[in-house]
Image (tube, rainbow, N blue to C red):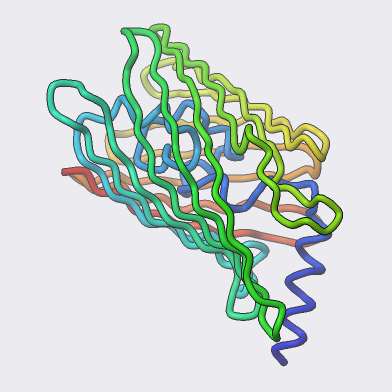
Length: 271
């Protein structure tokens, strides 16, 4: 049975080989809006764009899970914590994520620092430890890399750019295998007090560009309704969120033919 799941994992990974890195995004709010989240300022910005962490004024912790195509062996688990320093000296963040199961898994640990550079611009940088494990004698391989981004805020408009692994770290000597360089660039606009629209371009240098559009509607104080669409391959996303005091709970799902649904959930707490 374990060989069946091992094979299944690789079949599904290969079928979406040009899709985004599963550890590059975090939080069900992000997924509900097709991961057009390079401008979002919450604790999951430590996955989406570290520069956005600079706008946090309270400490925040978050956990999340994403079950790709509703296959438990393709779970991605996330945990993150952000700590704003006093006197506007920046924000420290730490995050961990894990994709897969016992026979095959990818793991990532990040330590970040973000700061507002002016009333308009903020920047963030993160140092990452990456590990990939294959069972049945294949072993593990680890590496280190860096990522970071810049965020600009102009009243109701935000624009951000994020780079992952700009140093093009080598993963293995065989065939000169390297961790991919990934670039994300996007904007969000506060259409009204109740509506935010977002768009993003995601580019893995080894694959085609992916374009994403998302929208968030805030009909009443405690409720959020979200949706989105992305390309290459086509995927539709949707979700809802609720805020109760310092707690924020979000659920979402993506849908991709013919593989099906990818449900996700996340919880944030600020203090």
